[in-house]
Length: 422
Length: 97
Image (tube, rainbow over all chains, first blue to last red; front, side):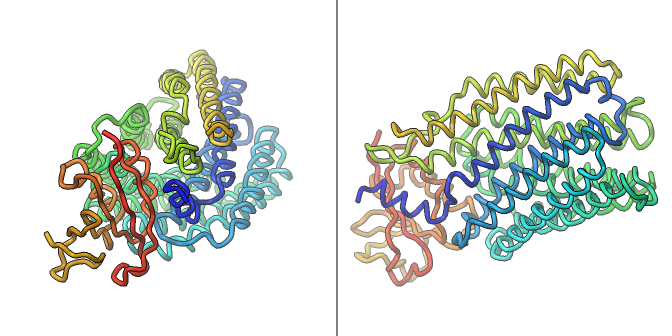
């Protein structure tokens, strides 16, 4: 047995079959394209969006559920068993999560787009079942994650946010048919905070404590400041949710201020980690990740200003836009690194050893994507800030080109991974 | 630095020792990604010339592409060395520049 074969035999025991993580990544890449397309079609409604069924809500959920949550599931089912040393016992629950959540999301988003409450409610129930099953798998992994206390703390808080987020999501869907909620908009804001900052935000911050030092080849930030940042972030999300439900500007203000301090501390810890890292040339993915950190800080500032009407007439929309821009930009930066890395783990060459990651990915597609992504975000920001549809149309079209480039990159990596020449 | 001819860690608790196989590094109990970073620091600092044996709690899969890029091959060894029970042992050998 060659060294490579011995190694692959060992590594494969802790890795899922490649079709498992990659089906989530491929679905996310497809949702990403669909999101920009729906934004382009419904460009006229975006700037003044304040909730309600239609194309903008569909686009928001294509991003939140389709891109962000789907990627988070694919990455965490693959990375957590590796980090927690838990052998993979069964693959079928993860497949079941996929087959509940992804078709559920498609139907849910269709129900939003065409304003069909019955489809919306049934699809919400199916999606919720898939997400709660994923929550169970996540909990099972987190129970064994004593060796990574900071990541585990973020993981548990994200899981709590996921459960509440799903509850609010189902209630909001039901409320489109029967009047259940005393205030639909207040519940929708709580749902947004629990999803954007709670589930996705906490997962992003938590996984950063492993991924950023790993990419930069640095030690992880020390536990004490990390736990302080975690406590502040969690407190901000709890207060933000309460403030949204109580419609209290004072509570929302305190939440935004605590959130700003938490975000600042997190960014500071990550910046110091990069500075101490052995790898200085971090490439395009870290241009996206650093930009995402700046957008995170801007989200908190604009959110604070929007509470007092100081962020312009479309301040609330601008806040929501920045929240999703930070998450999407961060996640794409991470995916750029993880997708070719995971692919390289599944490939063995006749000569032995592993292929270099550069052999598995066409980096020109990533350049196209990053340039389009940046231009699209700037144009969308301008469109919402000045309330003009044209930058929204042009930005969405450019974003669509970028998303196609990213989807092409993902498919290309999968093709090279499975091609017999490798 | 110790000169053992088995894989056991030295009794004084130091995390680096030398046997006929090469330099051994005990990376157990370290929070990820510290084990990987320690191996790469050892390789890049020049403390290790051609062979390194790492004792890990878990298989360091994220280390593999980094080793490959630096011209090191790796081989997972079944850990039946008594002292590294429950963990894994990785033999790393320099083949490239």
